[in-house]
Image (tube, rainbow over all chains, first blue to last red; front, side):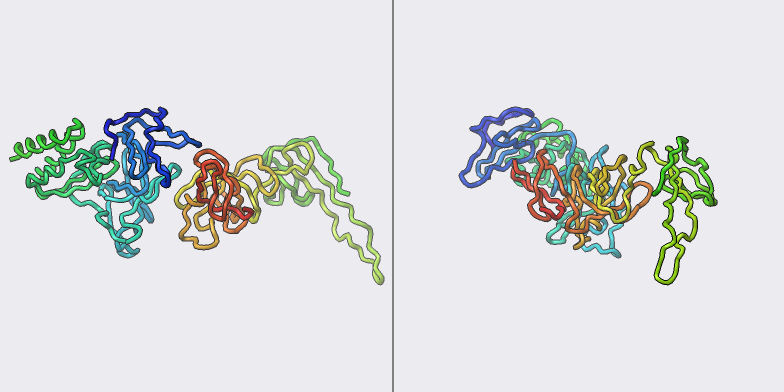
Length: 246
Length: 213
């Protein structure tokens, strides 16, 4: 549950101690964008909205950055750059070092039955290792169960670029209430059949049997993101686009 | 007693010093086609051989111990001072102290600072491969959980390696990280063979820790 009035903070600002959730047993958990300077200082490191969750005794900052910084367990859409001896080089965003995706990090892959991916193909993967000292590493299989769970190469379709904040809202569990994103549901209600994959690195992959649907979905997402439309405006946009298509 | 006559002549690398029939090669020289050439830029030193003691007396025989006349040793030393100050290079089997420069998924690049007890004048590059980090479970080693850039590591030289770097190993209990700094910037103290702890924040970080812990 977020606070009623959104509090925007700048890097280095001091936070009002009354906002910090306290619990007699649970320790306070800091999410992305906040830094703890012992003994008792909490300082934001990015500009954004401070979100406090009293139930989970946690606080973090919602921000819309320009550059994607990989963190562990993120789902991303990457493009194969080339294949090396034991792994693929995958590009997550331009002008950043490539991530590595081992050949055997796919479901039921052995040395003899490896997936043959060629440069330019898209993969939906999870970040298995990300830190500031090394290039990120990916995997297309769940580490505990060994199943793909929807990860793997993405065939056909088209990729659209969205902002990082919008991608995060799309990936939220309760995207309607918390993320204020209803465009996907609205598109589905209007009878369009499509499949979608959202990457935290600001990429959305859309696939459908009809190309018009793919373009329509892409346009709807782009316009929602660029114009920062609210829920009502999203519905209107979807209706308008569907009407144009027919 | 060996006497050292320091001739004040200088030699440049590749300069002809003498033939092997007249001199024995010492440090800073090399042999090419029975001739001695200098390998370094420095001062030429000629060391006369130790005078052999007189014939030893035994119960039955008198043995002449001086078999052949020894040749003087010619050497080229960088500093004009004593011949004790020599260029120390890491050899196979030496224990060295190094600082981690960069980590990659399959290896850690280090700069060798101290060889044995001597501080090296030049920094040599070393490589610790992922299979040389530990002695057990070599295939499941994660470099990020063993070293971080900036750590001081005690390692053993296992090979002179290739043009760029020596190959080092930390696969013994007493080898590994001896000094580490936490993400917050404080010096950490070791807890057990795989953890260092920051006393100020209380957080621990994984490392391959050297034995006195």
